[in-house]
Every structure is written in C-alpha cells, then in structure tokens.
Length: 298
Image (cartoon, rainbow, N blue to C red; front, side, top):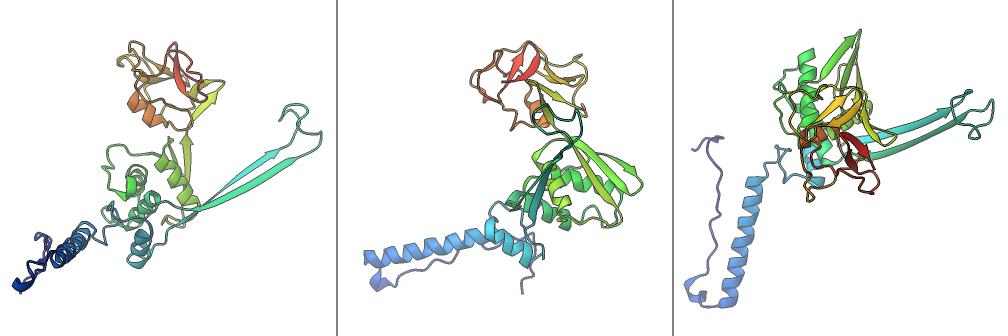
C-alpha cells in the first residue's frame, strides 16, 4: 500500500483512452477519442495546479475562492463599508458667503462593497497564518500588519524587513505608516470587524499620504524618506521639510509612463525616483512633474 506523501508528486498524465483495432481507421471516432483525452488531461492539470486548500493560488478566484474561504475555513468574504462625514460650523471656519451666521452644515454618506479577491486573501492569511503563534504581543502585531500590507493576494512576506512603527498608550496600539493599497485595506478591514483582534485592545491606524499643497507635492512626516540630499543618487526623491524634492542630474526618458497624484503612493515614488518626471508642466491634470527640483502637480 502506498502511503501519501508531499514529497511524491501526484499523477501528471491520465491513462489515455484508445480505439479498438477494428475502429482505428475511422477518422471521426479517432477525433472523438483525441478530444476526450485532451479534456481529461486538462481536468487533471487543473486539479494539480489548484490545490483547493491553498487559497493563495492564482487559479483560485471569484466564487471558487468564496467556496473555499467559507467552506473550508469558515471565513466569509467581508463587506467593507466606509462613511464620510462633513460638519461645518463656527465663525471663521469657512469662507464668506458659503454658510450663514449661526448655522451648521452636516453631511454624511456611506458606501459598502464586497472585498475583492486580493483583500479577501489577505484577510484569510491574517486569520490562518500560524507561524507567529497565537499569543498576542507587539511582535505578533507587527508581523501581522507587515504581512497584510505587503503580501499581495495573501502571500507570505519577510516581515522583519520593514516592520511598521507602533506606539502604545494604555490599551491603544497606534500605527503610523506611508499610504499604500495594503494599508488602506487594513484600515478598512479593521474598522469593519473583518480582522481577528483581541477585544481588550484597540488599533489606530494613521496613514501618511501625499498632499496637493497648492500644486506642490507635500507629505507631513518623512518616515522612511531621506531627510537630506547628502549621498543620494541623481533622480532620487527626498523629504525636504515637508516638500518632496528631486536630486537633479537625470535626463527624463520620454517613454517613461506618467505618474499621477491620485494613483501614486509614497513608497512607489520612493522606489521609482523622480528622474523621469517631466521638467516642464505637461498640462495634464494631476500629473507629477519636476519643477526645478520640487515635485509639482499639474
């Protein structure tokens, strides 16, 4: 009797069907058998490439991911809701002729949507990853956050490479980090109760984002951004007292894809640098450009 082992690969090829000798000269029957063999091999290849318990597989998406996440692990695809509230009142808080004296303006809107496959897989990994142990600690939290933010589609991540900055005040754990798709998803998932977290503690997430300050790209805190141009290569970006600046010395590549304020994240710009930003205003709304060493927004 063969004992199942992960060191032994599963069957890679089906045993093909074939025609009896007396029918082998019939082209139509042979085409039918060939089609059957091709289909059965395709089914086998799919099952070999799609281990149903491994939800991080790129072959597991959509309704199949829902079936696995809920059916095997008991975790539903989260519904993520966000609410925007605007309240204006008080003298000198708004421009003239926009709000009457002694009047208050209040507006609230809410949106809700199902998490996409990427976020759903990150949520599954938050719940199911066992390498950190099950005892809550500062290191456990740093590992979980780093893996969620950086591990696309729930993939593992070398969490010790870039641990988040966390401070503790009483029972409140405050996280501050540069804006990214993963960090925004983490904030949304936590606020909607989609992540397992000790009930006696609270998690506060502060996202440091790019700001359009009168057409100049700024950021409130440097975090991992260099704060001095000394030693930086030509084209590198750095935090100049809040303003994002570029080290001169690079001729922009006209074939480089444009970067836009609405879709460019701080870590993305830090990795790409500003050497390929246009040296003159491109005239396209929201596009980043290099205005004499300062990153500007058209």
